[in-house]
Image 1 (tube, rainbow, N blue to C red):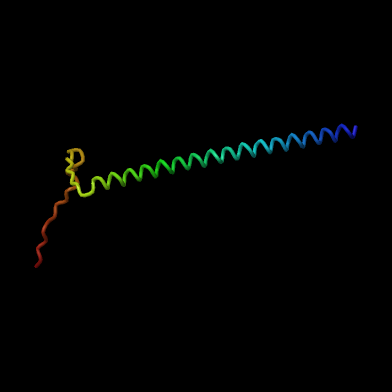
Image 2 (cartoon, helix red, strand yellow):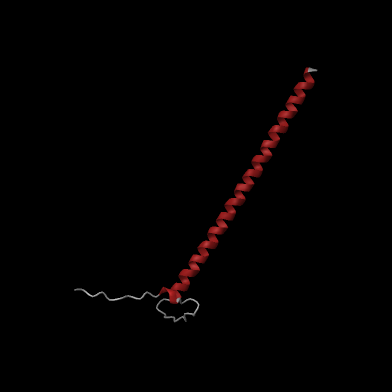
Amino acid sequence: MVLLSITGLFRTLLIILGVFVVLRVIGRMMIAKRNMDEHNQFQRDKNKADEMVRNAERNYGKTTISKIGKSSKKDDDFVDFEEIKED
């Protein structure tokens, strides 16, 4: 009877230890995947910033004229000033 309970206890401890090992391995894989995703996002952001710098260098000194549409102008923004007479 004692032998069976020791065997069951040992088996239960091994199962618990196995579950912890599996969870630890899965956790490390998830951390590695997150780090790779962060690295890829950083590279995409860096490439986008480098492209903006190259575009700015290519257009340095050039003048562009853009047409302002009627929808972007607002007549409500105009402020009328009155002159104040000093005595």
